[in-house]
Length: 86
Length: 544
Image 1 (cartoon, rainbow over the protein chains, first blue to last red):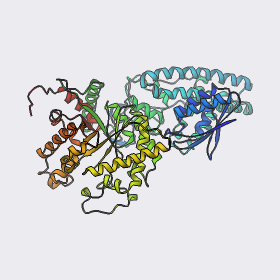
Image 2: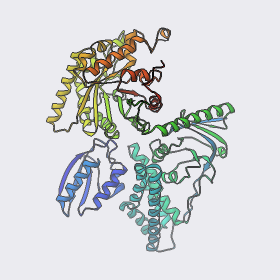
Image 3: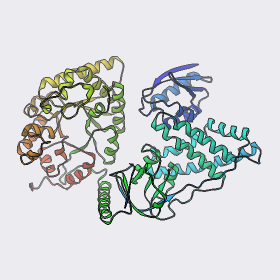
Image 4: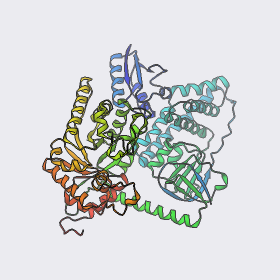
């Protein structure tokens, strides 16, 4: 299992567009990715409405867990995604 | 005549007959005569067709409103692929022996309610999206296609609510404007209306008797007049024609350089007082932001805004401007702009009092928070910092030293910083007289003509009794500007104007002849100013 924390830069938070892109990116991986709002709920990253339902705003910190498959590569890809889009 | 008010989505006028649109109420059976497997297969077939339709809408929107706004239909497609959504539909069909129509409707309502209950206004607005996708599937299942909402006639559409897909499907050549009872100014529908340049009001309590009546949407005053009086109608027609003229000007002048007939170029930037104004800046084709009044961040807060809050705002503006210059003026509070939490004393003469850089240099904690936020945002585009109300070289050196401290602190934290140009406002007679020395310290000057005029003429512009003495073209002020330009250029500084005088077209030629490098004006003044610049020929004798 791999894990990293990330603070959201986008003032709108994980809104529809980046959530959609995240789902797309994660579906291409062979690992299970979970996003947890630190101190709040968590959701599987390939479920669009659940991710949007976390209500993550700009400045919030999320904890992202990557399990199964090529964890090393998946974790790097997901972390890159957050840096570029959120 | 009847008047109703709402929230305006766009400053514009629409005139035409009202057409009330009611969504067809689909009566659906709850219990199915088919097996759950057969019902789910029906749902699945309809879902595939809905995905096709959404793909088509995406293409149409891409064409009409651009990629950014078309993305909503991609999101809709993904929502229709969402595992939780599909599981919920399947669950209802399986456990309640329900029809596909009932299962889709109920699932849509449940998810929509969950979004509506969220704290964030943006997420609340997504409730409409989930309902929209469910309705699309149900319409396909019941063989009902959306009716032509405008019935082929130009009209102002009136509805309880409009979904983004309904908005995109509308025939733009017939849609004059729209009015809805529900919906927020934040919804995708509102965003689409803005992009398509359609006057619209939301939150209007309309009644059915309006159908077919002549009406005027006055987006400037957030109201609609039903069966307007003749005189009002004429006024509105005129306003609308002016808008059209302005629009034509805009289309003609967009992407054209600010260059005189004999080839002299000058930069035209925009003044903004709010992060939300950036849209207007781009719409009016400004080459950059010449004055970003950062005070609004402080005036809108209950307490000192944090570095993080400020950083996010600056970053958003800087990123949206995509590499074009953004000149952020540091805190200019005091005088007529007050925030309670600063705890400033009441002053006899606030214009000459404790304000702007004078606060910043004595309360370094406030100043440094802002400077760090600006430096961090500079990594995301082209940022300049401008210090206001300067009267001495020492102040500029102090401010620059503080900026260096902030830079060092951030570098220690490993934070990325861009190249930041440093400049000052020239708005006191002292700064004009010292322009040569000041120019050695900075890379640009921006003339704040409002304060400069008031301090030079010793005239309070708020006092109507002084109107007869006040002259915005006073030779003393014009000579000060000329002196500043010459001194700046002697030392390699570029010089601009960010006060109201910059938009005064009777002075444009004078400013060009003085050699000003930039004029920064309100977004609406940019294109008219461009037109003026492009009509001038400096090789000919001045007419003035």
